Image (cartoon, rainbow, N blue to C red; front, side, top):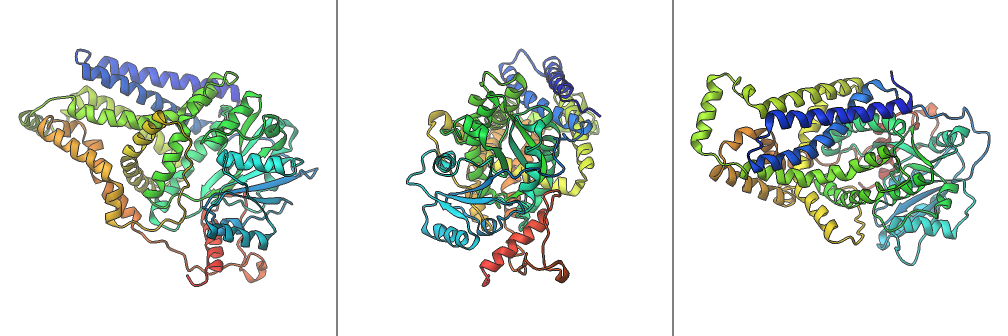
Length: 551
């Protein structure tokens, strides 16, 4: 097992380079027809894909052999650092989450409320009064979330040693702050500014979320538990995180002027020589409950991700830190490349029905071995087998079942298909207009009707219609070469409807009194040392039932 950070960074860099060069060489030598312009253009786009694929595959391979990063921590706290919890909201308060902010370690809780809706403000005031929280409001929304944090810094006690940031749908187990401080207060971590908790999904009430949530553990294990700290990556999610206040004050507070104010601040801290580290203790957040919520959240993330192109230019960051930051915008740019490539593969080639029939007859006569003689299919089959084996090994390591993975794949591919035109639109809007727009991700979404699903999917349906027209009139043979992505694309609206139509369950679960004793069996115990999404779901639903007894 590898465990030395510098050696891991070198191994990762060499592995990415080796995979990338091998894939490009195979394409250039055996697949690309250099005499055709469209084939050359396709090569350029495939090189882009290969780079992103190389990063992904290298991370998965390395995570199979690298132990989880062990950040040193104290056995017990020897001092009492002063901690403030900042709960940020703007018309999206989740009463269950706000009500459940309490810690075994003494903390002061501030609700940074930029809400404009009176009903939301009233809810916040009622809970804050009940729980003894301080509500902080301001005259304007300058700087959005970063501005709200900076306003608190300017107008409140600057003697806090640490701040904990929460979004409106965040949940921290009661022992989280105390355990996080054991890492932060260890002398070897004095240069660490960002102590990011592991984030799990708690709103497991409908089919959409329950299908996606099990594979959340894949990214968490590969990146958060094993590689990010070893690779000295720069990161901050902006929620479910503990920050060292002295470092934040040193760089002048949170960086305003960005949608991704969290990463912008982490980069500024990184340029000062300070570090970001994941800590192996669990926190929770809600996932959008249907495709409509996904689109709204993704539009915000897309604009924020484009800002990473600026972050990666930080002169004091290492080459690897810049490369890792670039992963995020590259993932979003991939949508533009995918759309262009889809149309090129259909409209960039010409064939007739005669070609289609001849291909089908050869395929029938050769019992499918005819496909293996085509270089493009050879390339796709080999890369698919290699990546599939690596992924299956990783899922086996994590205990994810084949059925859970297949259900996730079905839904995630459909989400990608519906998201495609929205992603491209967001990127183009960002390139044309850099004005900051902060959209609020909807909470507690209702089930989608078939009509609503079709309305949300209309841009994708238009793309499907255009591609079918191209197949019928320009390139019938293209259906064979592109069936592996055409079929999922065509059924994506139906898949989305199937997973989104389920109604929320568990609303009428009985309330649970956390103050009850263990003797009567009524209390729910949550610890940050374990991942307990089902338990947190029950706890927060119980709070919802308490506040809405008529439901």
